[in-house]
Length: 397
Image (tube, rainbow, N blue to C red; front, top):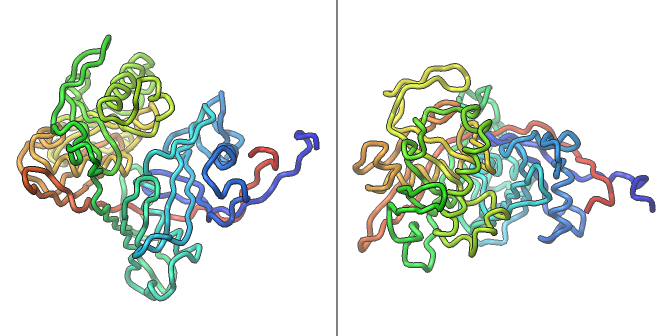
């Protein structure tokens, strides 16, 4: 058949907001057979659904909305793991390149997994109360970690409306409390959640500079720098960085060298095919600033300032997984995040980001000289925006 005349096919899907992100959610069994397994067919399908790759950077011919926060896909299925309800697989879909990054989680969309799993009938009804909170045990398949979502229920249905406000989201909604269990990557390198074994390293980036850095695997691999070392105040909004091609190139070079030092890539060239991880963020002590909404944040409103990049752009708020990394690093004395917040032992911090503030907690203990974090805690909200079927040309995968 002439591909130009091929019919479109319909695939059941649900479009959700989770935290400050949006994504297209699928049940594994609803995907076309070639896309039910990892590989080129699945990637090609998700790229076409989102409207990528788009040299115009707009994703006009797809469900994406031209930002890393809105170019996301999720595949859910009944869990194959004991003691879990749903398996959750996340794909970060590149906007301008034919690439889907499966290397990490999306903490924001994690808030939507529990509600969506209930909506899709993936959680046993015996585990869902008529009223109160349903505890949904999520297996995050990308990174092999457990997330527990506490989903509000009313009259047997997910309660989506409410008065919980999340900076970066226009309208209030119901609160979904999340527990990221054992969020740190306890790898075999002997460094626990710190792949180098240090809470602060010296990162040398040829042609760019030498920086103090905290390299941590918690929530998502993250590289933290001091804002001042980059010439920033920590109060920047998106326009100050995303329009500066030289700054973005400099930050990407730092991120690539950080990935190498963390052992996530074998050579610098691999960084271009691993855009989703690690994240790069910079921190600063509290200061007042005007958020992107126009609301003024007082220095006394926050414990520290954090700005983070996702897929090569300054994020409009904060990635949920990076928030887990922030909470974890803040709980461990001596990290750059902890020092920016004033040092000492902390169980929670409220940090300032471009859209406002966010509180995140972590439970950290030191065992035989090594730091362990048992869980990180934060609240988000989620809402189904649309449900039905997406259409893609039959020849697109």
